[in-house]
Amino acid sequence: MRPELQQRVLDAVARLGYRRNENARSIRPGQHSGLIGVAITNIGNPYYGNFALGVEEVAAERGRRVLLGNTGEDLDRERQLVSDFVGRQVEGLIVVPSGPSGEHLRAEALGGLPVVLASRQVGGIDADAVLLDDVEGARQATERLVALGHERIAFLGNNVSMFTAGRRYEGFRRALEAAGIAEDPALASAGQQDLEAARAAMTRLLDLAEPPTAVFAANNRNTIGALQVIARRLADGRLAEAPALASFDDVELIEFVPAPTVVVSHDARELGGIAARMLFERLDGFDGPPRFVELPVSVQA
Amino acid sequence: MRPELQQRVLDAVARLGYRRNENARSIRPGQHSGLIGVAITNIGNPYYGNFALGVEEVAAERGRRVLLGNTGEDLDRERQLVSDFVGRQVEGLIVVPSGPSGEHLRAEALGGLPVVLASRQVGGIDADAVLLDDVEGARQATERLVALGHERIAFLGNNVSMFTAGRRYEGFRRALEAAGIAEDPALASAGQQDLEAARAAMTRLLDLAEPPTAVFAANNRNTIGALQVIARRLADGRLAEAPALASFDDVELIEFVPAPTVVVSHDARELGGIAARMLFERLDGFDGPPRFVELPVSVQA
DNA sequence: CTGTTAGCGCTTTCAA
DNA sequence: TTGAAAGCGCTAACAG
Image 1 (cartoon, rainbow over the protein chains, first blue to last red):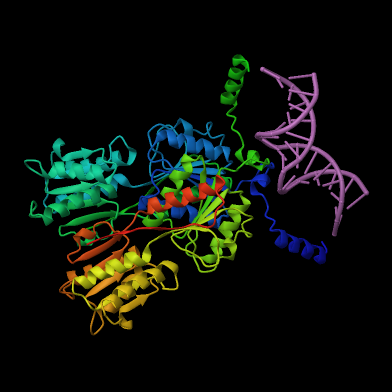
Image 2 (image 1 turned 180 degrees about the vertical axis):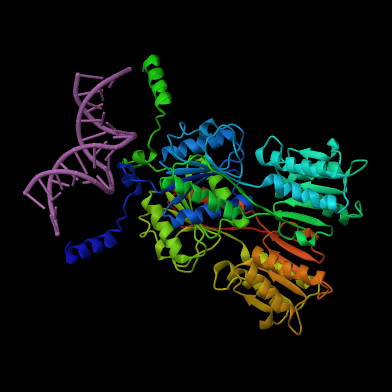
């Protein structure tokens, strides 16, 4: 092309503020939308925030943009979001599934779009998945509490029918079993989704005739909620000594807690990056069977 | 229409998995894309995570989806993102601007798309803006430290050329001035963007011949970094007593810090919701002059 | 109530 | 090297 003409066009572009319409472009056959759909349960939780960051960074490297939806743990909302994403011609999906049901994530329902499940698995779906090694992390953390001499160890977590909560409970259980400690049902409290419920559960535990001497909290909401109750009771003297605590999920400032603490830490950003990379491998043509990645976690006392 | 025909069509839709192509729909004149573009500096920071949550929730209520981009405080990246969003036919933009320069946010550059600036303002742009009341929050927090008897109060924050950091420094300065305390340049440390820098800055302050007796940290990264250094030094005995601390940004577990703490708390989710609502008012036809909202913060000792 | 057509902005193909 | 045309999936307008 004549350089002069090129210049004239470029000038006109600048002058008129022309911008290619990406949506119009994407309806042509053989053109991709450059979009990936990401459905997350709670973007306000720093764990998922960092997860989203990891996804976005890898997507940006690959010239893709992120369509973000927050499900709030609502399966209906997740269905709507996924359906909408498909209608918007996303090239692939990354989903933190809210529930055990996942027909809407089956390959046929998605018109063959690749999907990567993250953080949680859902039965019957042949999709790539990246998870944390929940069982082993929970087991090791509980083992540490046992090593500190504790036998009355409480469990605080989400409803164990939830994928991660169930796995973390399993790890907790295994550590107790290995130590020959019988489980006390009164010390297992599940179903706490948010801070308020976690505080209520911890309050109940401390008010038992024989309260636990240590607590395993299966996620950061339960850790923080439990510690808030402990802080209040230490301050007003109703508690002489803080129980030992193990937390699945790292939590900032936990070093100030005046009691032994064990932390299961992991890299949510990395998890997001891996999920995105797995998706891009599919987009690049990889067509093997579903892959299952379990990211190791590290346990620190 | 004959109900029978309708049923036949619906059946076919279900059987073939038909989904309307939203991108194709949006290129028709008079059709909107249903997309809003959100450019944030760091989605992994819980403050911005909650901000994004607030935006997403309001957008979802209004049937809009969020295109999310992370700028990482990089102005070039912000420009690319905004330009890409426009190309994707977003109906409007919500931007946490990364820098003082904002030609790419001028109405002409955006082809008339409405934009709402959040958290930070940028000069010369006639756009709606929602900010925290940084000056007053910082002033009140510092005032509390003064009321506790402190005179050697350090400032830890981002580079004061950054919008929020500058405003928070201004509030800090005003409180000192009102109390008749001369500023000591050795006690003002700015430019810390992340935890590592914050720790280094705090270390420097504690190593002064005459270290501060109190610290005002202008954001959660600086608060956490400072407290990490304090925790370490309390643990190894290099520090006998923790300095008092005021934190702009609420921080979980701060109640365990064994020293007086003042917290400037605010609701990032609400801030995001307001930004989104302001944008939707524009989309609904509101055409008044740029609005400026300053969200009050609350200061707790 | 149903069917047809034009045209949105784009890219690919084919023709000049 | 440049120009013209076809057609992507959709909706609005119009005709039957």
